[in-house]
Length: 416
Image (cartoon, rainbow, N blue to C red; front, side, top):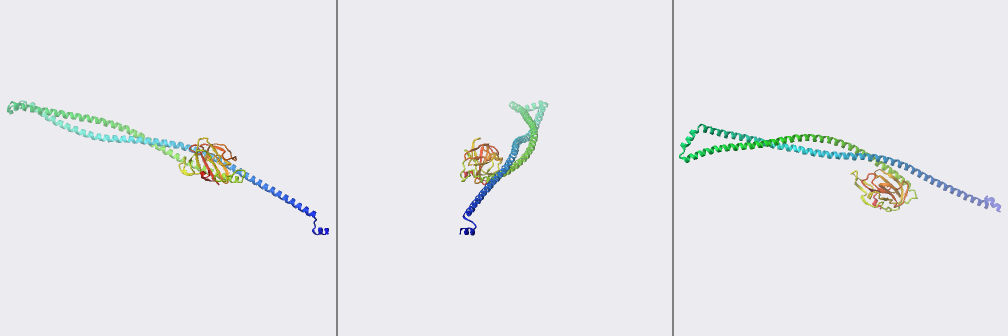
């Protein structure tokens, strides 16, 4: 019976046991294969991630060198611009001083002309007065000479007439005295006319001397006018040339700033790409809350997040972080744990550190004097990573601090 059953099924109990064991072995081998395949895929994926990071790091190093070269050229052009600006200011000041001096000289010439015009009028009047006095004197002198001549020629008859016509001795004395007074009055009048004439001639001589002095001053000031006029023209031409040079250098600065900004944006894109790759790295401690950040520095805020007038360019631009003023060399702390994805010169930021904190968050620390961490280094919240400086486009020692989410700047104060 047993043989019949075995014949009908084709297998016995022993054979069914061996088949199950075989299935278990096959399943084990399959699991082992799948495990190895998964491990291989993971290793391949890890290798691919590492290769991608390596390529990104190479690109970032190239961008960093280009930014350094662009920044070096930008600094040189800005130095030239500052020199030309100073020269323009000096020339502008000299030109204003020359224009002021020239105006004073021209005003002096105008005053001299006015004084000479008034003197000419006064001299003309004096000449008329002198001519009038001379005519009056001539008349008086002629009258006196005529009377004297008549008295000399007819002195006997005159005296006799005076005596005959006198009624008495007293009348005679009065007539003689009256005649003498007439003679004396004529003499005194002539003396007064002559004295007035001398006085007027003295005033005329004084005014002619003043007129000669004014003429000399006018000649001197005309020379000054010619000199300062030529100096104004030359300085104006030189100032125009310097302004043209300044405009050309300013154009160069603008072009270099645009190029540097484009390179920085390109580098930021590479950093964001590296961030995305690092998101799968489970060995770092990602930010789990928007308010897990600590203040990176003890100091006071000098410029907030948002639009502001740029302290160097003078134009209104967007400020993507906050500026915290502190003493030169003061320690800067990591605001949160993460991996350093950039450490080095970063264009207008100067010496900068960028830390990836996971979940799309990163922080940037700019204008540092010294950097104490390197790329790919893991840091813990509160570690000293750099020190306060004034590198890059900076007007004094401070920290430019940014927090970015998925590469987009956010107000750091909303996360601290």
